[in-house]
Image 1 (cartoon, rainbow, N blue to C red):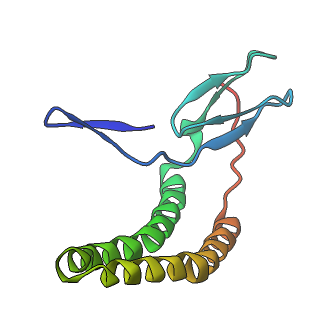
Image 2: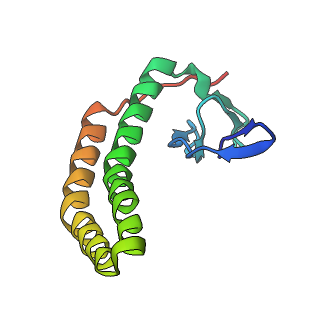
Length: 131
């Protein structure tokens, strides 16, 4: 997981999707972008920095967009309805529960299918060479 230090506080960012490498001897592993790996079976060294950064960034943009589409509306509803529940009555908390449940059951699955389909269509298969 990536971490940044800002004003003495550690901020954790969401982990980037791993890159799966299968060595020529057949040993698979998952690495983060920019990491090196030496195969324990044959000793070949692989470097994920060989992948063009702009292609990997395009993949990350799709992942971030999906996360924003899933979490953004849920957080927006909570920001509006929780203060209403506190100051105007518990019926607003019930409304928040019902709306969030409907969102999770009716909106998120089509978003997930569409995001998966887009990821598969735009997925790159890079041919890395051992160092």
